[in-house]
Amino acid sequence: MSMSPEGIFFTRGAIIKDNRPLSFEYVPDKLPFREDKLRELSIKYRPLLYSGIPQHVAMTGPVGTGKTVVARRFSELLTEAGIEAGVCIKVVYVNCRQRKTDSMVLLGVLNQFDEHFPDRGFSKQEMLRIIKKHMTKSRCHLLVILDEADVLLKKSGSDLIYNFTRFQEEHDTPYSVSTILISQKNPLNFLDPSTLSTFKRTNLLHFGKYNWEALKTIVEQRIELAFYPGVVDPDIPDLIADMSEETGDARFAIELLGRAAEIAEERGEERVTPEHARAAKALTKPYIFEDLLNTLNIHQQIQLLAAARLLKHKSYTTTGELESEYRVLCEELSKKPLGHTQFWQYLKELDAQGVITTRRSGKGVVGNTTQITIADIPAEEIIRYLEKRLLSK
Ligand SMILES: Nc1ncnc2c1ncn2[C@@H]1O[C@H](COP(=O)(O)OP(=O)(O)O)[C@@H](O)[C@H]1O
Ligand SMILES: [Mg+2]
Image 1 (cartoon, helix red, strand yellow):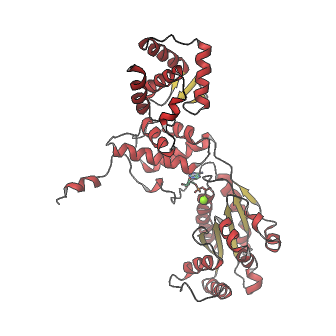
Image 2: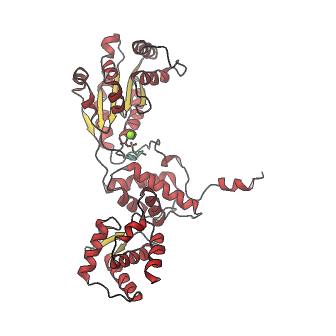
Image 3: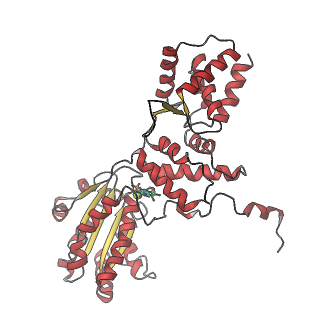
């Protein structure tokens, strides 16, 4: 088979084995640090599974805390448990950012039963009746997951959710409709009192920001799933956890991992290194690097250059190492080095400005070394810029 010269760009890279686990739609079998949420949900939906009694749950929390992926994984587990128990539970996932009105949501539900259902010409009440017919025919209960529910609730009010919660009474049927409402803000605040009354016994599940440990574990899982063995520097999970700890956002962490790998592949390299992760992070920060450097005094610039030189080929350095490298550089520049206390003072300012990141060394390490890294800018870029600025004078 002959290939055009351009075809060479399609050659499989040496790093990414499978792109799917790096996408946001991917649902891993295991969700570290969210097992408790899956357990809670399973317990809440037992009455549906074993007695057909509908359940209504709301999930809230900031972006990237696993609300959507937990709901998706839960729906897989619930469907499987239904099959085992001889109960059909049909789960329909609706993103309300894409389906903002009651009719559009109902259409989404109907399309799960009948993909050719016409997309106009039926009233809400008619659509609800047709849904009931499908449920009766297939003998299925229904669970509707309304993701980004606040968009629907703001635009269309809580009528539809009211209809769902009263489905069995209104349509006189043994098959029930359950709901899961997902939203960053508490979706119960948007419900009118009559709808809220059915939701009262509902528990609200809150998803908190992920901590460092959780982010690290989530990144490790994706490395395992998406990459060839041994191509990712072992410090990458720590580094990415450092970079995303502030937001506690797993989406951001996975995005950084994916971008770092892309950068490595684009450069034709065979391993994902700390420099690639820093370059990935730099892409997310629109600030002008030069403007930032202009706010630093000469000693801080020397400190930063020293750090960059040490970190060009590794993830972390220590304060001890940094201080000696700084002294070497001062000599090169014929500058009198700062005393230890002042050195520390300036370093702390760099940390506060987010130019460098410091962390007290973790468990198992004796003493109290402080680990230092640069999280936002590739060390290479800092070196290039600062050497020009400091050494050419
Ligand atoms: N506990 C977890 N384990 C593995 N991956 C996770 C976990 N939590 C979130 N993710 C992943 O992080 C990204 C963001 O999660 P998502 O569920 O979309 O967050 P939210 O809906 O709260 O904004 C997705 O790619 C998701 O698969
Ligand atoms: Mg989501």
